[in-house]
Length: 470
Image (cartoon, rainbow, N blue to C red):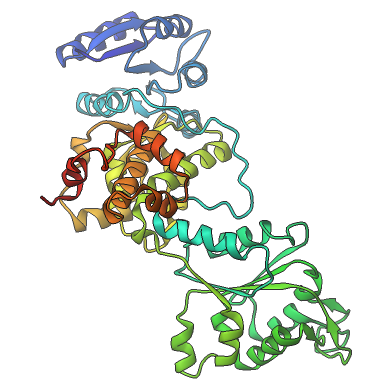
């Protein structure tokens, strides 16, 4: 079936000329000679794309574009004008135009743009329109590794044990610390973060313990340290592996006695704080190398939480994408509702050296750069595309397989996680439910929803089809 294009221009001759050209190229074309007529026809025919002139009397193309974005956000709009200027171009993209073409129109450019526009108008499941108010410590993921993290948080939240969180940069160590604090009896008290690498070494002691007036040059007044400010709450020491040996000794004393003196002071002070530390360094190796005190390491490492890198929990990627796109829609006032299958392939193939932080940045950029309400490969940063092209020939943007709704991707990830768990635990649904952090009732409901056969009643053919075997 030919894809339908609405051509809008106040000059009837332009409409007819474009109609002839596009119909010869296989499109079905309807025309309109005013903005109001265009809006009426969009309501009736729901075109795959709109080709819209900017300079029109009564209602110009920018106003028509704004109305279309409000009422029909899924319809790509290609603006065309003979009068290109900086502000018009900015406004066109700001208000969600798929593309902006300058007259006289290059036919190859027009047909290429229309092809791209009409391949991203498949039906989508709406996401990102709900009110999202992320709480501190919001963690996203259903992978077995993340389920273990959640379980550990649940076990230790009510206690005051010192926690050491280890993981690569960008894996979400601060979020884990927040989750511990806000699920603990200290949740109504301060949560104070200190990035040990962001403060010069000679000032870090003062930042932690405070100082008295005149303690050093520039100390014109008394200053309370983070430990005093956090009394009753939690202190999160990020990148603890980089502090100096002298400060390591003072921190050890504080952990043992919960007591300290301000820099330049003699009065011993006591506070009630919980310490959560994090590092992207291998502290055991630093202990062996003499760079980190062994006694401090064991004081910090009462409970250890190891966060997996994103490349080791790829079943969580689409859940995170769904969440970050929704956050970005709210942040930027956008209405992105889906992404193409090739984009999903790229995101799943990439190794994410910057982990979850990098994925969030990529999602924010993609939402800002999206043409209309769909993320296409062109919305992604070039470095990411180059990295994936270098690893596989499986991705061909010119052969995009259409739009994959975000919720459908999430369902695929959930289905994969359940199938893997069923395989690992040989169909024992009690063990599977425990590993995935859900009840047996929820597991049965999910299996039914996702069309997963019960291995206790079937011959495991579904598992073999996905994972191989005989």
